[in-house]
Structures are given as C-alpha cells and as structure tokens.
Amino acid sequence: MSDDIKRILKLLEEGKINSDQASELIDAVKEEKSITQTGIQRTDIKDKNLKINVLKEGKNKVNLSIPLRFAKAIMKATGKLPVKVHGIKDIDLKVLKAAIETGSDGRILDFKTDEGHHVEMIIG
Image (cartoon, rainbow, N blue to C red):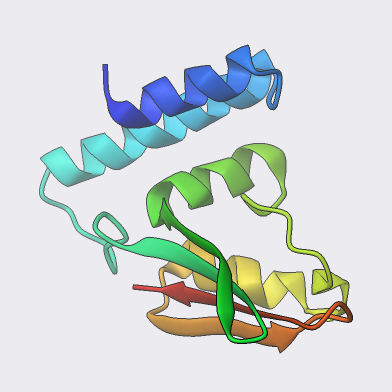
C-alpha cells in the first residue's frame, strides 16, 4: 500500500475526512500513479512540494512540506486548503488553488497576519 493511501486512511481514521472524501482522494492518487506509469507527464507535480513557513520575530514557528499531489488531492476532495492559516481570509483563494492545481513553481503566497506572523507558501 502506498504512503499516500496510508495517509488518507489515517485522515479517515482520525475523522478529519469522511468515507466519500477518502474515496475521492484514493481515486486521485491512483489516477496520478496511472499517469506516471504510462509515461504521460503534465507540468509534473510528482516531485514537487507545497512548503509552508510561518515566522514570528524572525524565528521559524512552522515549517511544513506536503507533497503537492497530496495537497491537490485534498483540495479536490474537500474543497479546502490542506492546512489552516490564520489571517488568510484577505487572500484570493482561487489564485492560490490555481497555483497548487497547476504546480506553479516559486512563492505563491507571502503575507503578514494581524498577530505579526509572516506566512509564505512556496511550490518547489
């Protein structure tokens, strides 16, 4: 069983997603694997990660890296970003979602929250 499917089952077990969402995520993982095996490559997100850094007073508070294909599958199944970022309400989420779905390289988000946190999301 792949690591991605194990992660999905863990989310289901923890009650973070329901069985329909888990099924959609597993289908997305299988579809990605099928595309990779046939040799058809998109602007491939296979080896990319969504990196999320949160800094406060110059110190790293959060340093998270999620495989981009997993983040994309979570968004497809739940309609939400794979993480909660406080202060993101003023950001156009459609632009952020499009960057994740297409696998755009580079910094896709960089802002400061009301609490003084510096948040950045990078695809690479």
